[in-house]
Length: 297
Figure 1 (cartoon, rainbow, N blue to C red):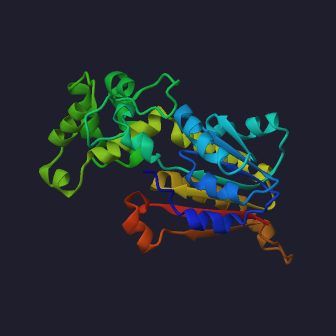
Figure 2 (figure 1 turned 120 degrees about the vertical axis):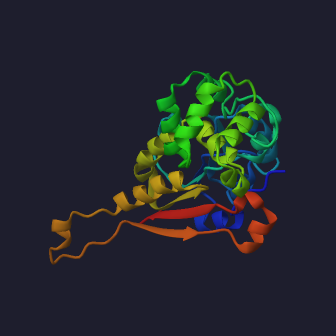
């Protein structure tokens, strides 16, 4: 069962207007979208997901609420382009949840899990070509090292990349997990499952997650109406760093101008919210979540 993270906080901070236009960029199984749609009476909810299984499953759920929604099978990096097709120039609120949905994690053949043996796939869009197996079996060592450190801050990235090269080919996740554990110091393996970070790094490369987020963030300022909200739920430091830097640039002021005796008002504000202890106990996948609410004044 998929439990949406920070659901009540998302609904509260979006401040949904009955006639507003809102975008859920990571539809998943419509956990957030269902609650947003319930508050929209004559507005519109635009939902994105590049996983056709998510789009099809969510359509049935949303149809039970009302018809004020549009489903788009697309990477959220195409936000502006897709809104233009709908003749929508600006919206009241945008939500992006950067976690992997539970059905994707729990479906063995999708290859996202490191705890059960599965094909090394990890594609969120099954129509895309690049799989995790292509990376571990074909990328040179230098490129593997770059992926591990840039996507997940993997501690022993050189040692792991070298072990991957020496133990090719890989057909499924079990061999990769075993190789990772065998090449690391015993104390490191005892602390936590080291495969978690490696699988994260591979998944982010397969789906170009950081690249898509960078492209999306460039579009946000022009697409939000005055008093519009951009809500971003992140689960690790690489994503959150990009969102944090995005906000800082929104309010950047030339130091020379800042010293002048004129009043300048920030055009953007931000609030950061974390899951409650109760939610973290109920939904383990929420434990590393962080919600940034960025508002356009």
